[in-house]
Length: 425
Ligand code: ASP
Ligand code: MG
Image (cartoon, rainbow, N blue to C red; front, side, top):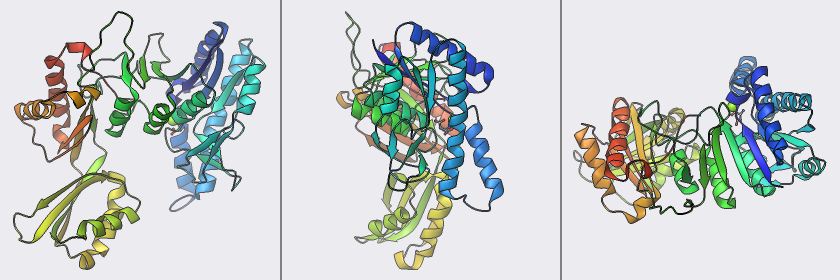
């Protein structure tokens, strides 16, 4: 008998009727003869509402330990209701908090990392023939004895970690879209669902702004070889299989797709430091100041200044939310670093194209740049990895750029077989 982990996101358990519908689906899986472990998110927008509430009772940042106590209650509500609903269908079900389920994490409130999964009680429940329902997004730290959360969207990670620890056949992630798409259909109307994608591509797409799967969950799946099936809880359609390798169906010859998908990201800003002395050590000094604010840098471009001799301009992109802290830290160090001017620009977009086949295929950049040129889109920054090319454009040009790239690569190859990928939670 095979074990299946099923994870239901907030949109799938938004109200009582949805919980009953999800309970039916879980019951059907159980009745088909599978052992079932369920991971559930908080109902609908509960987490956001709890965060709002926390921000209403205190000026500034709520205490991290208490915030985790508060936020984990969202998942407790849905896990208990779901267990009741399943019992109401005549099947045995038991709900467990993250700590009861053995999700051992480090002590960092709000962004804890899973250190170990010790699902003894879950195994016992399964051995008793029960369906185990686990609260997503939360864990427990042994040293502090406190409850932790894994960060927003963390229920995906809970599900994948449990699937790995319990050697599940598949980790099904139920959401409100049909699977992984070649692009966000809201941005690129001609996007289509793909049947399969590799974890490697999915990690790059998630990093590039695709939101359907949480990046840490995909990284976990890649490291532990967990097979993920992203599918809709609103239909019975097959979704998208995310695995470490694309496994060709029998009799099928599959060429590695050049391009898996196109992602757009409007969540970043650009900071430019003008007139940095062109001597060794300046970049180190600047990025140490930035790192001390705990901001994550994405793309970096350094250029010899056209207007000032012996000086360079350094631009980088980062999350919009990190901009105020980084600007303040750099401004405070202006004299020490010796730069002339600090600029920032919120009006940018990052458009990325991802595909494992880029490794072995020539001319991908040329095709991308040609598509943008023909669409009249100007590129402001470019960065590449082995299987990804990202460009920064004006925010207003993002959709045009994404559509042009999507079309260029689709027309180029064996149409549907060649273009894959992701977005939309
Ligand atoms: N409820 C949490 C959140 O909204 C965790 C999750 O949904 O995965 O971020
Ligand atoms: Mg949620």
